[in-house]
Image 1 (cartoon, helix red, strand yellow):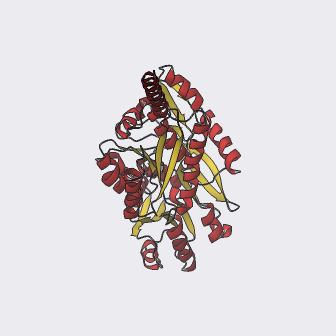
Image 2: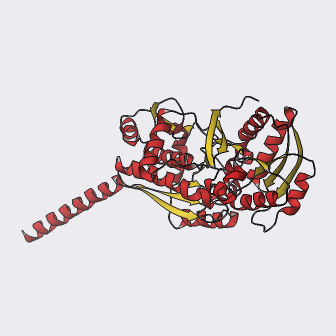
Image 3: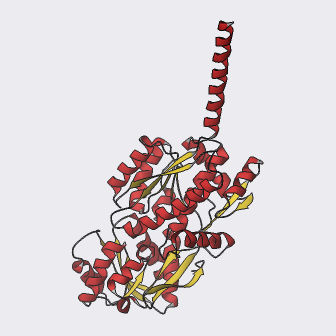
Length: 406
């Protein structure tokens, strides 16, 4: 009798253990890495992008989580530097065992991460900010995606609005990396194609104490406007020295300089009238829902770019894991287009519960993001529209959101 009870106890314990194991498997959850510039030249955007990631995770966890468990976010500081970015991504993949990476921001950091980490380890990576045209043809084995359009489009958009402003002669200074060179070339090609003149195009290295030599060369052609393709830290130094040396007093910016802190540091009197472009979605129910959720969580709307695209990247990786029914990185990668592209039930920002219900019912879904339709093409790219903004009374003001027609 005792032996029988013992055997029954063992069977019960085994059954209980199996049940607990099944429950644990069902409540697997998902861990994602955030490769963000918490320090360095793009620090100004790192915190807001991370806030977008955290907002997505908070909403998802409040509405059922992923695979029955919690969505966890682990942060790695890329320092806006290629080697530091690769090191951070290696830790996320090899030590934290993440199923996907959101980031990086700078194309010059995103590309080496894709080549050395994401591709090599078979882990999907979605950047919400890397816009270099080089990414389109990168040999990444389809592990690199982005939720922001290529600078092949932003260069055209910037050229279009510059001509519309009546400016047909400019000098260009660009940060000497994939982002800066790609955008400078795209702008110059489109601007010249409409009879605009680029009097000089000068590359520069980040984090120098002086840019007077580069400014001197850029000013030699006599252009009144300087198109500056840079990040906030180096950009601030260049603008100060341009003003102090009398090289330029009128500026045209790209997305990398849409930073309220930059305007505050230089002064509204000098920055008023400056205009530029940034990728931005047309207003939709999804973008409104995201805007309202952001304001509720953080108190006010962000004037900086990339927070909505980082949110979308997080949402898409979580949706892909749920669709795949797995945290296996390759399975997540393989499901990304299934949840991002039509056909399927439209799922917007904050609608995680609706997405779960649809997937459990065997329905296809099509995520319409906070930053617009995130339909990945064969290269992992998305189409997009752009914002023309200007600095007025020391603040950024949206003039229009448009699709380039040049």
